[in-house]
Image 1: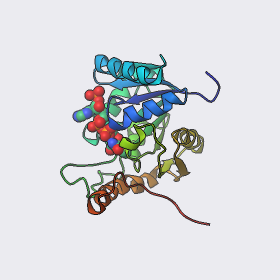
Image 2: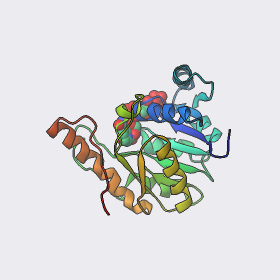
Image 3: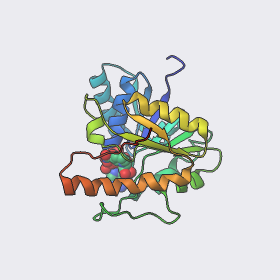
Image 4: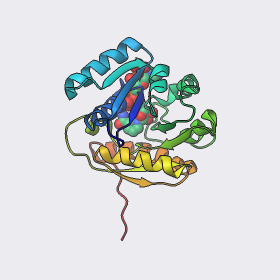
Length: 219
Ligand SMILES: NC(=O)c1ccc[n+]([C@@H]2O[C@H](COP(=O)([O-])OP(=O)(O)OC[C@H]3O[C@@H](n4cnc5c(N)ncnc54)[C@H](OP(=O)(O)O)[C@@H]3O)[C@@H](O)[C@H]2O)c1
């Protein structure tokens, strides 16, 4: 691998967003560890990604082992199970960058903003993992279905986190997906990204859009 390539664990990488990110980052020559609650399910997902990519650079492991194996750990699990999974990987991610994609959706009202206690999932993740982990929030405004296909993707991504270097590393990963990323400031600002998704879901329904996203304008 060259200096610019990373080892990336995608926790919940068997799901919609996780498998799409794993595919695109795998295609960009990053080494990927797909994490699952079941190692067997992770191995099957990794085998499918290797088949699609024509590589052997995607590995499937149980979530905790995937988190331990990589430099950058991306959380792509449902809000309902997020806190339990954060607890499970806490030891494995010390000293690393954790990218939190979680939107606090509470079915059935998924087009309503319903923020957790403390205001933001990513902020809670930072508090729970501690100061030795650099948590970066990203990807809340991107539709997994578009990323999963070999098509160009539109839309922009807000990248929030207290550590500027970690944000810059994640911005580069956003750009390898073909998306524009923006420094969104400290983790406190993640509440905005997490609130945008229910609004985008509302717009999808109201205007029959297929994966509404955002774009920042200015001169
Ligand atoms: N989908 C999108 O377009 C999108 C866009 C932006 C952000 N997000 C965020 O990304 C995260 C993942 O979304 P997703 O749509 O990819 O979710 P998903 O496909 O429903 O689930 C992702 C993975 O999470 C694992 N998981 C852990 N606990 C679970 C539970 N209690 N029930 C079901 N699955 C569980 C499953 O993997 P194992 O069974 O292998 O453990 C599953 O494959 C969410 O927090 C979401 O808000 C999604």
